[in-house]
Image 1 (cartoon, rainbow, N blue to C red):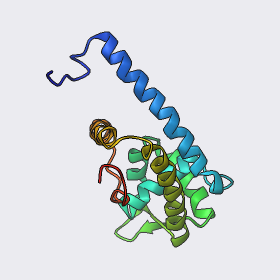
Image 2: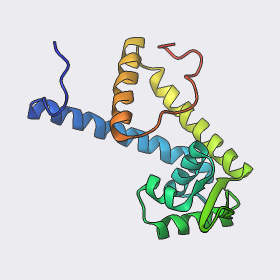
Image 3: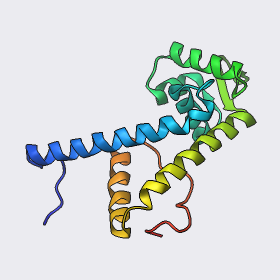
Length: 166
């Protein structure tokens, strides 16, 4: 059987792919929401996304952050103000261009990202552990292709030891 891309699939195949992705996204959103439980009182999901992007990008210009989050600059600025007030990021004027604002995570911001990500990894590991090695390998290939198509950078941490496909 030859490999097909969704644009080559018939409507029924495409519908099955979309349904599977929507179902998977519901599961992942539920896991994401539960992982934020311990910090939900002071970090919203969009704010956590900003923290994650900062953890991946390092020091980032406000305008670049707005582009990466696909929000307007004023929305990114309000999010950054709240995170700065909470002590999770530092915002400073760029010494090389005083019209730019630079942001970076504080130690507490890094701790929050690590804590939430660890909880998320644990829940995902529990789900994945109920899958066969073959299913896990197929999932890695499918999710890698999906993430690349969506422009999402890969997770930086390696697979945990004992993962069925390891």
